[in-house]
Amino acid sequence: MNDQEPAPTTRTGLDVAQEFIRAVEAKDIEAVARTLSDDARQLFMHARGATAPDGVADIIAGRRRGFCVADVKGRSEVLAYTGALFDKFTPLLWRDHAWSVSPDSGEIFFHGVGDMVVARTGRPYRNTYVTRFDIENGRIVLMAEYGNALMYAGLGVRPNGAEFRALLRAVGRMLSPRLSSRSGR
Image 1 (cartoon, rainbow, N blue to C red):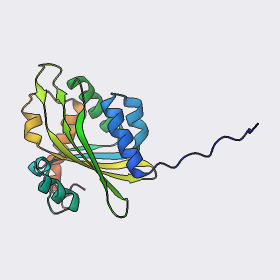
Image 2 (image 1 turned 30 degrees about the horizontal axis):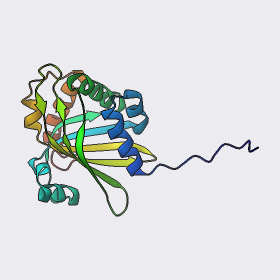
Image 3 (image 1 turned 135 degrees about the horizontal axis):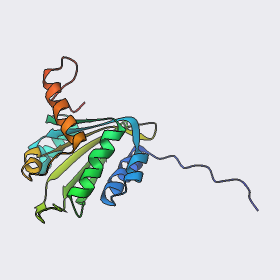
Image 4 (image 1 turned 180 degrees about the vertical axis):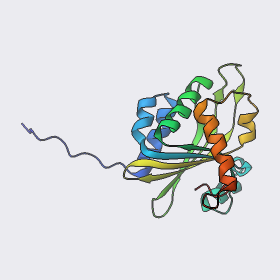
């Protein structure tokens, strides 16, 4: 009989990013929390290029940038934002998952088409997303989500406190000499 525990498996950045997407789709906030670093950040970048194959390729290659419309800062805010999504959409799913990993494995990209319904109205929501995940030490430190922010705003869904602070922080990025409102960093 072997009393030794099996060696822990090493998760790749891709494993962590895929775990995050699965956890969001399952509306499992504890699983989402396990993927995030304490200082995780989530940027929402308005970029219509996410809807066309050439635009997706340009976002992934860094040739196309978006405009930051929300800057969610820290694990607790990312969790508050994510928890609000759980309430706003049912189901909360993406179709046509496509993944790519940068040559140095430092950036993971997810492309998917939302297949969601606004819980309050029953209206379908079909935004297209490209999300870049930056992973360090097995945890997400930065997500930059590229999509049509105007489509989300058009739903008329009221922001919670974390979302409102993220919107104000994005305005601050426009004025900051240090932070960019265009780079997704």
